[in-house]
Every structure is written in C-alpha cells, then in structure tokens.
Image (cartoon, rainbow, N blue to C red; front, side):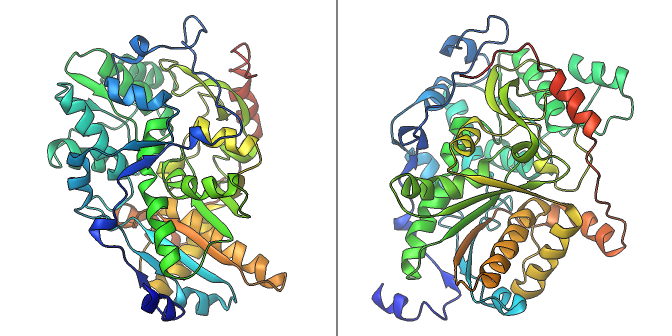
Length: 436
C-alpha cells in the first residue's frame, strides 16, 4: 500500500482485491440528523406496516426498508455474484484534467464494468436473491433507459425478460393513460403504476424497484465504501463528491458513505446533478406524494414535481422521474446535499470531452455528473483553488447511441420547462398529507 501511495500522483487505476469487497451495506438512516418522514397508506393516511407491503415485497426487504441498524450483512450468495464485477475500479482522470486545463484532481468510480453495464446489478442481484428465497418466481418492474431493466433480467432470469413499452394496453393504468393521451411519451411514474398493478394481481410475482426506496439505496453503498478505500490508496480524499440524480440510487451509492464522514464533521461538498427538463430537487417541493402516476403506491415525503408530471422525452431516460428518494430529499432539506440542474446539450458536450480524453462513452444519465464535475473544476480554478473531485460514472452509454447520433446531427433540443405544467402537476398534490 505504501508503494501505491508513492506512485499515486501518476497512477491511473486504483484497484481493490476481491477480499476487500464490502461485507455489509451501510444504512445512512442510523446517522441522519433528521429522521425521514413515515411512509403513509394511500387509503388511510396512516403509517404503513409490513402487511401493507407484503403483496409487493419480500419480508427481508421490508425489514431493510425500515431498519435503523447502521450496517446490514450482505448474504454470502449475493457476495459470490458481486465478485463477477466487484470491486469496481477507481480512475484518476489525468487525461480529462489535461484536456480542460484544471489544477484540480478528478477521480471517478466506474460502475460500467458490471455485466449489465451500470451500477444497477448491485441491487438487482440482492432483490432477486431475497425474492427467490421467499418463493417468488416472477418479478415486474419499470425501466427508463434500460439499465435497470437489463440488470434485473440479468439477476433473475439470465437475461430473459418480456419488455412492454409503457404506457401499454396490458394494464388498467396504461389503458387509462392512453385513453386520455394517445401520444403519451410515458414516464417512470406511469411505468411504475403498470408494474405495481401487474405484481399486485399475481401471487407468483413481486414488484422490484431500481431506485428511490431505502433498501435499494442501501444495496448501492458498496460503491462508496469501495471508493473510500480506493481514495486512501490514492493518498487523497475528495473535497467534492458528485453523482447524477433521477430517483437517486447511484448518487446514494457513492455519496452515502462519504456523507457519513460529512455528518461526523468532515468538510465535503456533496452535489446532486439533475436534468433541467425534470428538475425535481431544484424546482420541486418537499411534500407527501405518490411514487407513481396512477396513485397505487404509498405516500412518501420527498421532493416532487407532482405524480402526474410528465417530463419531456430527453435522452437521460433514467432521470425522468417526478420524485427523488425520500432519504436524499431529507438530506437536501437538511443542507447536507446540494443540487444543480443542467441542459442536455451542455451535458452531452461535457460527455464528449470526457469520452475524447478518458475513452469511455458515458450514459446520458452519468454525463450529468461529468458536467457537474467540469463545472466544479472550473469554479475551483476561477477561485484559485486546487480541489479533489470524485464522481460516479454509473454506466456506459451503449444503451443510447442514438442520442449521440442526434447530438452530432444537431437534432438534440434543450427542452424549455413548461411552467404551467409544473403548476398544474403540483396543484394535483394539494390535499395530500403535509410533512412535519
């Protein structure tokens, strides 16, 4: 380790041995200065209990959802599968630093080395394991850009899955949307409604979510725990930690273990980057709202644009969600996390700077973190400071090559946010319970 630190200034990759794979998930609920608001039953307005969630989730995941234990052991069977791609590499972005002429040091944790090409299998494998152990043979879910859907297919049925474009004619929720809006571009909120309806109607099926819920964010914390060890190998510690945010899973995965350090008193700027076309953290309100468009899910206190807000069809499909994880929302509310929103053409321009220097074509979602990183480096340079910046490159961009084609052709539009649509969608949540 000492030899690695000596050469850290010029080293590109910082790797951990499989024996250093985290053995426990980190639960930030144990350290949060303000406890998250209770989840409420959509019919009664009272806090939900395990029996309310049992039709959708296995009991072990329900327990993790409400646990306040600081750490939860990762099952051996899950660890065995993690070893297919974990620990993932940490890179020092020397070439990116040179390309933009910054004095700051930039590191990125690369989750695109997983079989599905993103961070999503970290929770997909765990969820599949717990569901299989309780006898579920089928899972239903939603996916935006395809990273989560492919990850769950990898975890549960060896890449076999039935893919149905949403909104669809297969569910009552989908049919209702299409009746009112035949040309609907869909949204994660609509797809969640369809997936929940499908799961609730079959005894052999459970619902699996790729973001937002506490247990999903919990499973992702292997990312940040590895990054802490790898930054130590590099002889550095980040001044700034950055991730893109839709529902919040990859951001939480990297940021939560560092937020534990920040809550304990360490000075770290933690930045959540979101699309300007779906600016949930920067423009949404903190309120109780449904997680889906058809109001089938429990009510959670989160930053939201309104459950029937339909984001513009930007190419960062995984970030087109009207809400944000309740844990992240509370951390933003407490001032431990800050958020910025970016236009997609600016994001793609930064993605190409990164691809041209580091050689990895990033997913449009992860490119938001890259753009936030370049902005942070620029601000540090202008202030005459040298900062250490760490971001999560949560996946590669091979699922959305068409978006890059459109960018090169000059056909990628920056969508003007419809203020009337935000006002309409937020009006729809009036009358719901109000957070404390």
